Amino acid sequence: MSRLKITQVKSRISEKQNQRDTLRTLGLKRIGDSVVREDTQQVRGMIRTVAHLVTVEEVD
Image 1: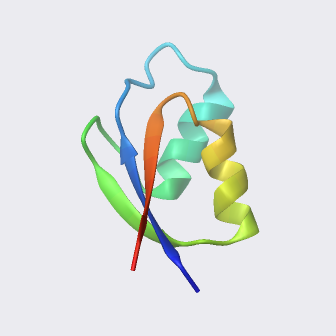
Image 2: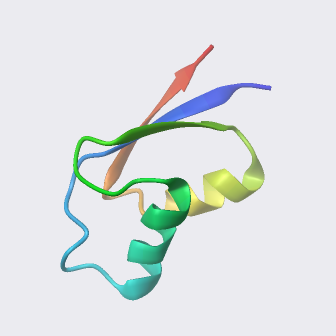
């Protein structure tokens, strides 16, 4: 299964509470933080929720 590298690139300060919670669930706490997650439907849904705040790369 492929893996995704998710990096927070924008602040969550002015965002809705569910978007802040989604970033925390993904493991992102501040701008510049990166996490690597398995490419599952659940993770894709979370990425879609905060797509304007993160960048996503596929890693092997």
